[in-house]
Image 1 (cartoon, rainbow, N blue to C red):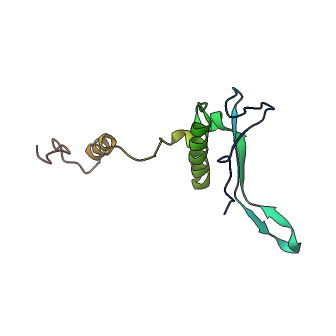
Image 2 (cartoon, rainbow, N blue to C red):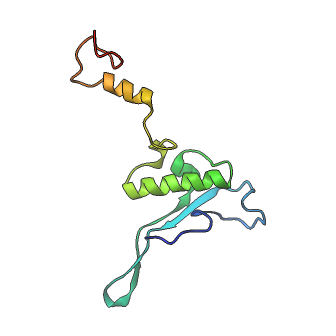
Image 3 (cartoon, helix red, strand yellow):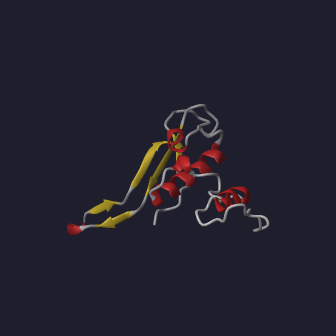
Length: 118
């Protein structure tokens, strides 16, 4: 288990005094944890360290937005998914559920999701 980060696993590589407000790009910096291997050597688990914008498909607007995007990117990375394909909550909407239900292969011709009748 990774240790919690004070900055939400985001950082900027710049020397600006107000780094949370400057225009430099955001980076995600996450390490999955450490384990002790043979001979007592400490091996790191997985590591995600790269620019946040290419990872999620857009540049976060502020510090809070960058932390939220970093959490999504880390969750996607742990699941082996692409963070750009995730929605804000990655939860289906009613309309998307209805549309996918109406496109199912076992659907009878002429029926709809609302009534179930022709």
